[in-house]
Image 1 (cartoon, rainbow, N blue to C red):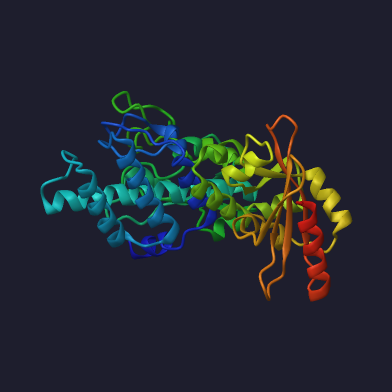
Image 2 (cartoon, helix red, strand yellow):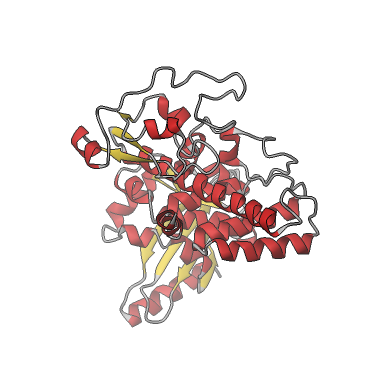
Length: 382
C-alpha cells in the first residue's frame, strides 16, 4: 500500500489529463451503478451527489488530490468541508467515524486507481509496445482469478485488454506494463508459461461480467477516451477555462513532442480568454497549430525549439502586450525583463469556426533590437 500511495503522489500528465476530461461532464447520480463501464471515461460522478455545484466541488477535490499529489488526509479535510458547506446528508457511510472514513477512502482510492490506469492505457497505446504484461498488485487477500493472470504476456492489440485491463474491481491494484520484445516482457515480470485462461470472456449471468471482475468493471479505463486525449480538440472547448488551459499545458509537456517530430492534422496549442477570441471574431477558444504552419515556421524560423512552442499557453496567459492586428488576428507578446521573449500570432477564420496559431517567434535578446520589435508590433495595433 505504501508503494501504491507513493506512486499516486507522483502524478503524470496522462493521469491528470484523463481525469480532467471527466470534469467536462458532471453527472448527478443516486446510485453507484447509474453510469457504468466506459461512460466513466468522459463523466465524473459520486453516488448520491445529485446537485451540480456539490458534484463540481467534489470533482475539484479529487482533481487536487490527483494533480497535486496531496494525499488522502488532505482529501478527507476537503471532503468534510464540502459536505458541510453544501449540507449534503444521507450519503452512504454518514453518521459513524468508520463509515465516513470508509466512504471517503472508496471515493479517493477508486478515482486514484482509475485515473492512474486510464493514464497508463493512454501511455501504453501511445508508446507502441508490442506486448503488454499483466502483473498482480500484491494484495494480501488476492482474487484468485487476478493472481492466476500474474505474468500473462499478450500482444497489445489482443481483445483481452479491452475487458481485463485493471482495475478489475473495487480495491484492485493490478497493473499492466509494456514491452517491445518477449525478452523485455520477461524482464518486466512476464512469464511465458502463464496461459490465457479458457473462458476468460465468459459472462457470469448474475454480474454480467467474467468471473473475477466486479460488476461494471469489465472495460479498459480510458480506452474510449485515449484517442480523445491525444486529439483533445472538441473536449477542450467544452471545459471551463482553467482546466482546459491546464490540460493543454499537461500535454504540451508530454505527447506534443511526438506530434512535433511527426506533425499531422492540428495540435491544440493555447486557449484564449473569451473576450480576446470575441474581439477577433472567433467562436472558438482553442487555437490550433497546423502541421502546414509548423512546416512554414521551420523554414522561416529554424532556430525555434519544441520548448518555444510549449510556451504558447504561458505567452497567452502572461502576455505583457496584446495587439489586435486587423479584425481577425491578435498578437500576444511576452517580454519579461531578463527572460527570452516570445511572440505568438493567432488568427480566426472568416466564418469564426476556426482559430489557428499562424506565427511563433522569439524576440531578440539584443535590447535595442528588441525595443524596435516591440515598437513595430505596437504600431500594428494602432
